[in-house]
Length: 167
Image (tube, rainbow, N blue to C red; front, side):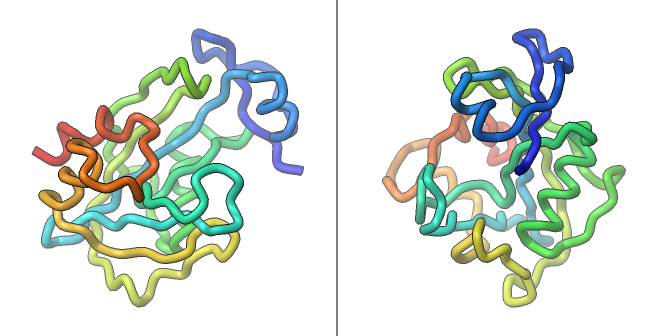
């Protein structure tokens, strides 16, 4: 079973725990969100698998996932990008936007962005995680998330994360 990087309320590392226990006990954990831009400034977004228990079939950032006990924010982000899209990136190529504390979800979220040449038809989606991907221009994404003009998007505080990135 997947082990998660468990932290205290100050983001200090505690003993790793199995995923189901972390959620059952409501423990603090680390996660990562990666926003991938193409050369035209469009953003790669993924539709969550319909097999997911949280937000099945809803759209979200390019990549989102939990950080394992052996990862830091950068290596966790690189691993999640590779797992969910098949895109191999180097940690030094990621731009850290911010790390913020989400009290509702009990997560410390590392938000990154990365610009790369993308051919969405070559994205290798992880079947249990991703239903489909698409490139969305910034204005449309801002309408969907910030101005809530679509109810097909997960809203894990993404409006806080990307508002600066979309300007």
